Image (cartoon, rainbow, N blue to C red; front, top):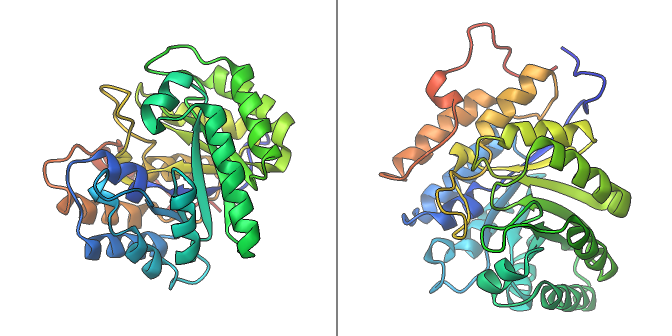
Length: 313
């Protein structure tokens, strides 16, 4: 079934459960189980995985083995290995480990930025500039992406002016970022706001607008994905079992579920190259290693329809 004329024929998905998902949970998943998660996600067809973040282990013990997971992920052919970094030191560790791409989070909310990384958004732009200079001096091929977070609102300060989001987007690109993304960190976005902001961001960034990152805090995650598809966005972050969230979004249910996202895309004839059946098997594996943790998403509960075609053609 071909997609609707207004939708892309194919998209790429970055699995962020190993980073955004696990860092939000109390459970520390064993390294061997993380490696198995990476392997099975790869076998399901995912070709970009955010495998962890380079942050001090005392702050996030869930991420203490990121270098080990990177080393394993790099053995899988054609897998883009991504990590989040909060600063230059983290970027240097990622570069030394051979990571293909790093994401530096830059909050468009001043109050969220100060609470989350103890820096203003413009200080994070300065950090980005140092990261790019360090990467270039080392002659590294590592891609540097800036993720503009709280792009649709903030759980601390409330409104976030879209003009500030676009200003930071321009500043990140002017500072040497290879690409940029927009994130609904708190889950405040709605489809109309998504269409407007991503269309404006595309005017600023062009093909360097790489990623849309949505949370399903208020049940609009997939609707927001659809709105982004309508304006031509083709790269999406998602998390197996919908785990993840933000410490400044009380009651948040987490990210868009990878298995629900793939199911929706398949139903619309938009190819992701990912096998939703294998994702559901992987979800069962991950659930066994996260006892007592809340998992989200609906396809795992309702099951696939009997008339479902496994992959978009």
